Image (cartoon, rainbow, N blue to C red; front, side, top):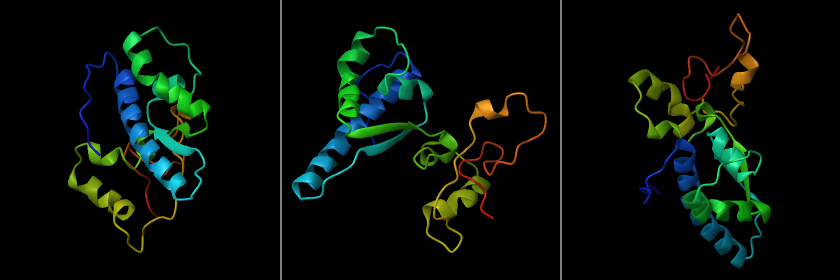
Length: 156
C-alpha cells in the first residue's frame, strides 16, 4: 500500500526506516494471520536498497542518537532479534519495487515488461547486481547484466 509518512524525515535513512517500519507492521499482520491458520512462517526476507538503513536494522553500524528514530523504529530491531524478519541489502537495480516509483522513458518500460507481465521471455530468477565496490579501480567495463544503470538486467 502507499502511505505518506506522518513525520518530517531528517535524512534519507530516516525516511527509509519510516517506510520499512510501516511495511513491517503490515507484514506482521499477514504473518500472524497465516500462523493462526496453521501455516508457520520462517523469517520474512525484506529487501532494502539503502545500506545505512540495513546497517541500522541489523545493528551493524554505530548510529547517532535520534529520539524520533529510536521511538519509532526500535521495534524493527526487536522483530529482527525475534527472527520474524531478515533485513537484506538489495540495490535498487534489482529491486522490483523500486521501478514503479520512478519516472522512466518508453524504452525502459519495454525493457522491464517481461519482469512485470508474464511472457515467454520472463525470467525465473533475477541475477544479483554487482556491488559498486567491485568496480573500484577497473578500467574496462566488467561483464554485468545490469547495464547503464537500467532497472533490472538484460534478458538474453
